[in-house]
Length: 322
Image 1 (tube, rainbow, N blue to C red):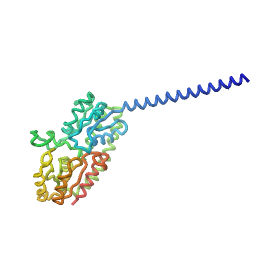
Image 2: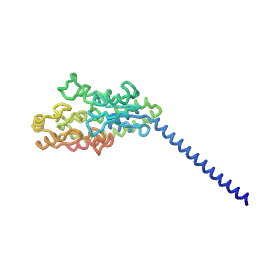
Image 3: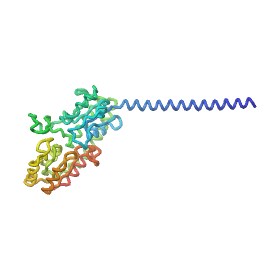
């Protein structure tokens, strides 16, 4: 009897020891799993872009193989971003910084980069990519003066709003990604081709919808959509701003009311971040409709990627077909 009790105790002890060993092994496996996941996460390229439209293109290429973030709130003026410390933290972690360029970020990005103190994304390194350097920009000026308003000496920076420029942007980004993350180069290039094929099909659809609005005569608030206008032969007669970045005067608004009638303006185009009052006033005085167009991804709730950005612009403008 005594021997049986002792044996039972030993069996119970062995069972507890075995259970304890199993728990320890499971715990170690969990730790290894977490370590592997963390290592894989740490191994991913960290891409930061200045604007959401760039991030949207990057995501089409990298899918889940890189971390992608952006700095600017697209509901606000892209020329004026508050350089908050939280944005500097994003830059401090970046392996690649992609900017629009053409001085669009000149007023806010440099202090953020100074604060981030990240040598990997300094100008001139493979970790810094200025998209504007690859495009022939319109509206370049030789003499810069504050008397001319908030002008961009390098030219109009909104080149990305021509849908034909998007595949080139995707090519440029993929090339740089392949340099920095060579092991995923083929993956990125495959996704690039898929993206360009899908984009080509969308462009055919957009071109067809825009065929009937050639020579549409418009006002726009700020010269955001000039590349789009040029692509589709839309005639820009004047801007609500008399000078770039300078609020319109009452006299300029009244001049536009008269000009709208004389020049047979068909639609007034504005954006999400400029004041609506001058546009509404001209519309009321002339009976000419106005539309608000998004300039970037997430600037309105209907636009959550680069495809939806141009879908929205084309669908709204094509409604004015002749």
